[in-house]
Amino acid sequence: MKPNMENILRAAAAALIAAGIFWTAYNFIQAGAFFEKMQGRRDTIAKLRATKQQNERIDSALSALASISNSVRPLAAAGAEMRELDPQALGQGLRAKRTEVKFMEIELGALPDFLHAAEAQVPPWRLAECVIESSPKADGIGSVTLIMEAVTRQP
Image (cartoon, rainbow, N blue to C red; front, side, top):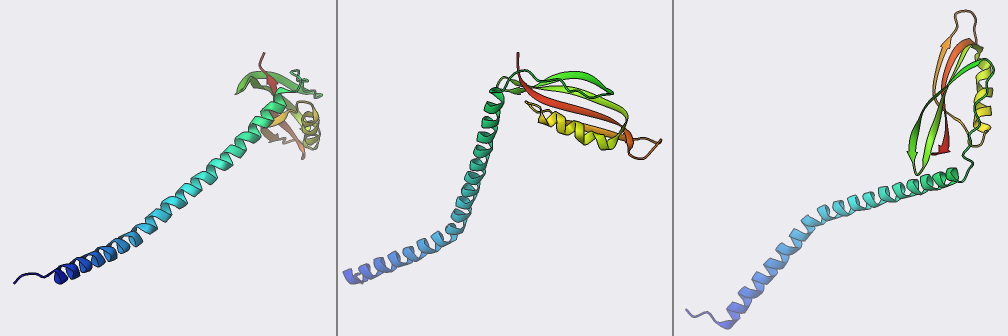
């Protein structure tokens, strides 16, 4: 039996339709993985944008700190024992000047006033660490050890 041209064309058309159906099904299966991959990329881009904004805020803060005077007024507190600690490098020519302040047997209610006064200086001092030990003698009395930091330019 000799295959005629019409049968060959029908077989080719059927093969093409079957290939098209197979290809469409394959693409539907792959579409989910593609969309997950694209969502992952969108999430990564969103995280990178957030990181960029944070870095821009940090850069602007460092620029503002670089423009202030290099002199940091020393902390003043009556009855406190103070000791300078090793400064920490912050980068971009800045460092954190660190001071340990020890109050022995003070009224703990006076502590916020000291912290507000330190924060009001230019550049401001910030509280980095705080240890409060209550006194057995009376309520509201205790010993306090503070680590205060201020940002200065490196010499």
